[in-house]
Length: 238
Image (cartoon, rainbow, N blue to C red):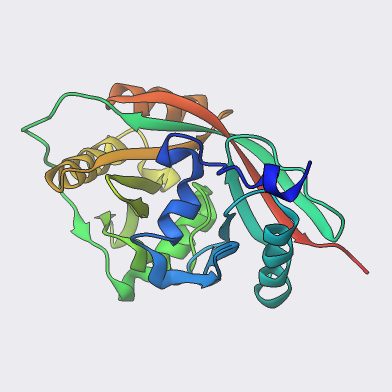
């Protein structure tokens, strides 16, 4: 394939197909490292990166970011086949879901707004429950809400990637000792209401194997949009 042919926007017609690129070149550009060929979030915020296209110039720019800042995670509609010079650290499939539910005027749940001093607890909770990557500065991407019980952070959820018209709900997790009490659903309803109040549409990503989470999200008004590929790339060993 020629580079010109490869330079077809991998986002195709829908902005969520190339969600990371659209976030890093739009509303969240202040968190970006890179140029017009490849960009990534600052490492303390997250590993997510994206390219303008699948051409060799963009892959070269991406490799430079990896060399300088460490591995990256690509979220793409189609599986990426990296050229020589890269190592595939991991690959999985995500389900991208978008909210198409009915407004809930009674959305209410006892919660606290999480701030910078809560980050150590947030990192500990996400490390224990593995809802997805969460770094020491991820909280800067949006609003994060939590539930405190027995003097500890029992549950949390927040906003991650933002682009025109859309905000991603992420880091939805509950401590094992406090599951089954409705905390995840309660926090998500609050976030959905807040995002809709900004005239934006909530969306999220979930592992295709996480059937319990997918079932919960569907009850909250999320519908399947499409499957996405998540690939973590590093620099190939010399």
